[in-house]
Length: 198
Image 1: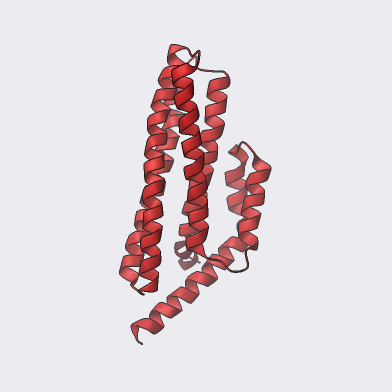
Image 2: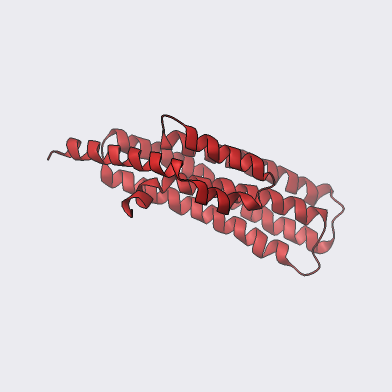
């Protein structure tokens, strides 16, 4: 078989796997939306993804990453404002500053991911499977790194003893939403690998 026939077959398999995974996303929804600041909106978003008739994984992941990037920048602006102008206790200020570092890492990783999605699409058009897999793995790496950074904000920065109140609650709700967006992006890019295990 020629390379173009093999690549066309792989593209059709990826399309089929993406469609199957969108339709069977109920397990993702059950795991992912419970920590959202707006679980209903989270569920509706996932339902909308499942109902798309023509699935374009690259476009879907771009939308999700842009959403996460927008939310990251808003959270960064809010936290910066809290740190500068808020009447915070010393441990709250320390938690905000530590979490700001994590949000900076997340912003950087999401921007890198968007560039990788463009490269992934170019590899698809050129029918270069080696490049496609390389960029797909890079996307997963950057997104996982973003999740790890946000997890450190939850588990380290805001886990200090005696740190309770509105600042912590507000920050953690927003961090949870960013983690959900990032997990959705990983879910989108992992369609082919999940399908290959079935």
